[in-house]
Length: 291
Ligand SMILES: Cc1cc2nc3c(=O)[nH]c(=O)nc-3n(C[C@H](O)[C@H](O)[C@H](O)COP(=O)(O)OP(=O)(O)OC[C@H]3O[C@@H](n4cnc5c(N)ncnc54)[C@H](O)[C@@H]3O)c2cc1C
Image (tube, rainbow, N blue to C red; front, side):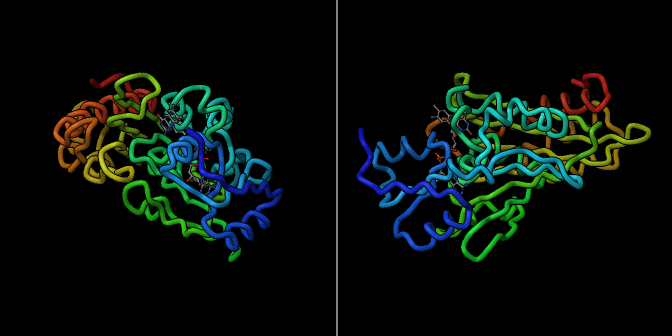
């Protein structure tokens, strides 16, 4: 299959890209092309103009500043996977990336492309939900910031307007001593997950949980923070009972059913994977495995 004909544009600056996106009809951003190009080849997507952000060095890279990690939208998934800053400050992302497609797709795929594509089973949006990321959205009107919980807008839809693009992602840092856990279930290595769970735990004096984040993905249109699970942990001593009670809160969710799995099966996976992710996070935060 070949895509329908289109005009190709290669801006060198963010301002130029924003102007093209504002003025060209039926235009789309090209990042790593790992989702867009197959969709164009199958003619699920037909565009008149492709605006390739590949030449915008200003949208690439990882920086640590004032309590947050700033990641350029065009940073490739493989570069994040091997970044010492990601390994040190955001080990959950490093672990999640190993489940994203294959090394070949990660060599081209970008974090911005993954967030804009917004597949319900994608790993990087789940990591952004866990860290309460802030998305920097660029257009001819300048940059606006969108909290990640406002970014999803239904199945494979985002808060981006047609003339807007993701420029960067901010992840507010947790203490370096925090623990993380990431588990997913997929039919084969490299497939999109049927369901997955990402956990973060920060444990203080007397083993009391200061902060907790439990995020499920593949269960609803956008990644789901399980507030009931977090409430069962925060302020409590971290032990096997607390983890069991938190993971049990995953039973309260209402997962989607599709051709890959029914909702009941996803709910079961959500509970099992939450337990594993929370146990890993607890162990890394200084506890022995509580399973
Ligand atoms: C075989 C295979 C297996 C895969 N498995 C997984 C997996 O397990 N988990 C997973 O998460 N992903 C998986 N993917 C998808 C992969 O992660 C893609 O890289 C990702 O979905 C899109 O990133 P990209 O940079 O390639 O974006 P592109 O394909 O270039 O773009 C995707 C969409 O996002 C838009 N877009 C891109 N960048 C921006 C931006 N900065 N601002 C606004 N809009 C933008 C594009 O216009 C397009 O609509 C897989 C892909 C393949 C081919």
